[in-house]
Length: 114
Length: 110
Picture 1: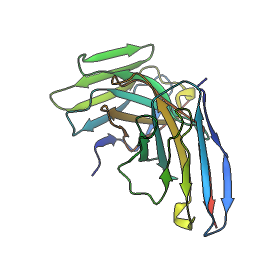
Picture 2 (picture 1 turned 120 degrees about the vertical axis):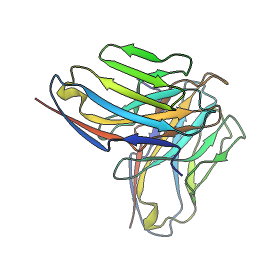
Picture 3 (picture 1 turned 90 degrees about the vertical axis):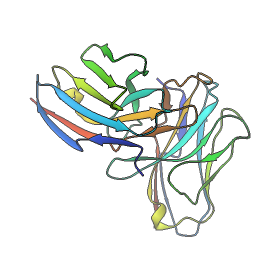
Picture 4 (picture 1 turned 60 degrees about the horizontal axis):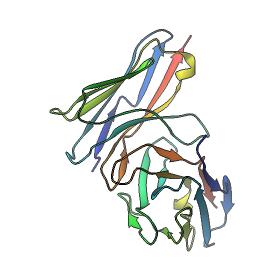
């Protein structure tokens, strides 16, 4: 069982609200990722981090922001939620230094903006 | 631009049959090629992975075939079972990112 946790699992929120999706891992992994998953299937990388104080934008443009103040914590924030932000958000982490290894995923947060 | 192309989008196989999913990539800097399995309501989980210095890797009923010159790799599921019904993602990784294919929804009927 992977030690990576996302909260909340489900969130329904009104347009214009600020939200933070939490992601924590206890494996000491340096690399962490946020993916947005379409209702169909596709996983789009929206943010990633190599370690503390490192954040990068992924391939899919997103209005969200992330921070990495602690190794184990990688929260994602939307300053003003819109219906177009409705999606599933998946957090993942991986270790191995410069050698790519298995990425472990959380269970996801299903966000609905009404 | 889709960096990792996956096909087919959906696949229906009879129990005991072979399921084959194909992927192609563009970036020669990718050096790790995992396959993930996702069940409804769950995050993806690693199924099997390969590095470009080998052409094939087998774990139980699951085999990855890798063709470096063609920049293609595929997943073969032998003796497919109803419990294999899930969405499968290929992925490719370089030191910077882990990029996923578009996914294949596999249904195995008894």
